[in-house]
View 1 (cartoon, rainbow, N blue to C red):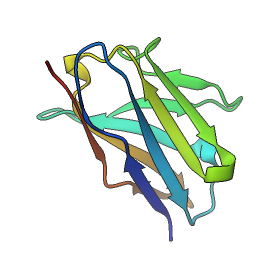
View 2: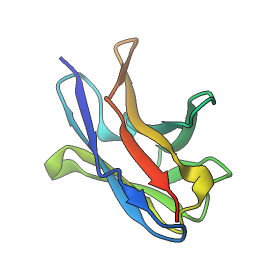
View 3: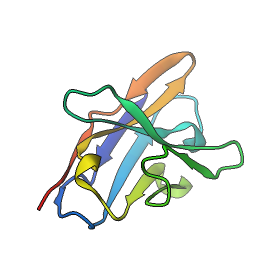
Length: 115
């Protein structure tokens, strides 16, 4: 059974930083298959960060240069480092993986950027 558990969301001031974690278990996939999405109130869920085939990060244009995706194989964990946060980054952040043709989502972690 695939499980994805996010953590690290918080209330932070504009310009601040957070690191989100996604701990994975079960399933048939590599950590490179994990990606991060977010959903703001009243908006559709959007892809924020993912790994390329060469294990580099690729990002939505709105977060490029501020967010970094990384992984720790020993901990079965994928991270999203978020710097220079803006109010428009406020959303529920989800990690996601597609395994054997099915989509799996974590429960989400709330990030609120506000002064």
